[in-house]
Image (cartoon, rainbow, N blue to C red):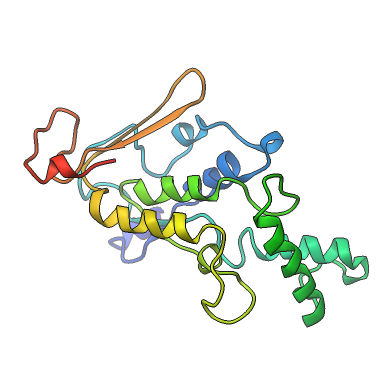
Length: 209
């Protein structure tokens, strides 16, 4: 981060704090899941009262990527199906097809064996946070296997709706807090309002989340 700042922030910093907490506080099985309070304890940008512009470290973040929380899941399935495949990271075409069949079916289950929980919730936080550029993973909109954009994922509708809502409503300052029951609240005030006390204008009244 210091290196990027020293060079005028000519590249975006990856906000790994955000990525890690999205995965561990929201998408892991309940027994492994971290607290929501961790979003307030570990961060690149403090969103407790984020009411400034052009002061945060320029950054991007994501929930998943092909080589983060996907490749390893497929490898786990391959290994369980074919112990002789070693770590599962170099499957045959047939082994990969078999693994994806299980992977795609597992995403649709209420109780999952391999795939992630609460993906819409993770994207809801990523897409409404201030001072970060969200990166959307193709495989969370469409299935990773098969023809390009041929089959929508179980999360397509939710993520697409949130992307549209982001362009219309997500603006202004942000506050974030966690109560004694570990319930996290995040508020965006709308264009023209950086704090809860800012009056904004007519447009402000139709924005914010």
